[in-house]
Structure formats: structure tokens, C-alpha cells
Amino acid sequence: MKQPPQKFIVRLPPPMHDLIAQSAQHYRRSMNSDIVARLQHSFSGLGNSAADPEIAPPLHDQFESLFRRELSEQEERLLRGFRRLSQAKRDALEHLLS
Picture: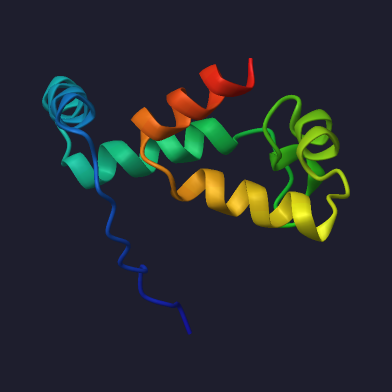
């Protein structure tokens, strides 16, 4: 039995929404059809498995190895605290440490 299409809600920034609307109008299709066509095109030539390593973006492994380094418990707490700071406080702390 054929499964019905899955509904998926995406928040788009206004400029991206406008581009999709323009593209859909140009190709005389709905915005949904335009998005699906673009996604299909972006995945063309890739493997069908969701776990396929070819789906990973360029430099994914390098970024993962860079950002997945082992941190001590103290470093983890500092990093979580830093991420909770406002941008102004982050800038002030960075200035203080430099």
C-alpha cells in the first residue's frame, strides 16, 4: 500500500520564502512542489540510505573531529555557561581574557 506524503512544517526567513515563491511562479508549480523538486535535485546522485556517508556535507568529518574533542567536566561547565551569556557579555569576557 502506498504511504501518503508526510507533512513537514519549516520556518523560512522572508527572503528565502520570496525566492521560493518566485521560483514556483517561474516554473508554474506550487511552492511545495518547488521545494520538493529542489530537495530531490540536491539529493540526486547520493545513496538512498539515510545513514549513507555521502549525505554528509563537505568537511563534515573534519568539523566533527574539531568540535568533538574530549573536554574535561570543568571545560564543559565553562562552555555551557559561556553559551548562556548575552553577546555583550561574551564580548566583554573575550576582551578580558585577551
